[in-house]
Picture (cartoon, rainbow, N blue to C red):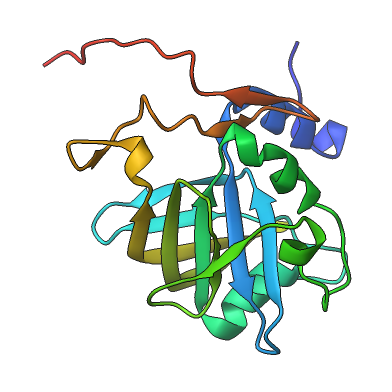
Length: 194
C-alpha cells in the first residue's frame, strides 16, 4: 500500500498509528486570570539537551490556539508531568473539552502542587515533572510547536537508584492510536556498538 497525502486529506491516523508508542506530556499551565489548566499531548519529545528543551505540538482548535498553548504564550510558563498507569484514568479525563474558565485539575480531581520556579501548577503525584519557561512557539501547519526550556525537575525518589532516575522504575504510559495506550514495563536491552 502507498499513500499519497494529497489524495487522503489527512494523514493523522497513519502518523498516530505508526509513530508509536509516543510518551504523554501531561501539560499544566495557569491562565493570566488564574485558572489552572491540565491537558495531555502525545506529540511530545526532547528537542535539545543543552540547553534542556522539551517540545509538544498541540493541534490547533477551530478558532486557533487551544487553552494550553495560549496560556504558555501569555504567561511563558508550563510544567510537563510524566504519566504512569495509576494516573491514566485522570489523564484521560483531562482530555475532555471544557470551557476556558473551568479547570481540568478540578474536573478530574487531580491534586496540584505549586511549581518552584515557574508560575504554573504541577501534578502533585507525578513521578517526574519538568518546570519549563517558554523557549519558542512555532506554527507548523495545523499545529503549534511549543518549546520549553527546563528550569527545574521534580523526581520522586521511588523512581531513582543511587540518586539517578532509573528507567526500570518509571513505568510511563505511551500513546498508540485511538483509545490504545502502552505500558513501558516490557523492556529489553541491547548493547550499543562502539
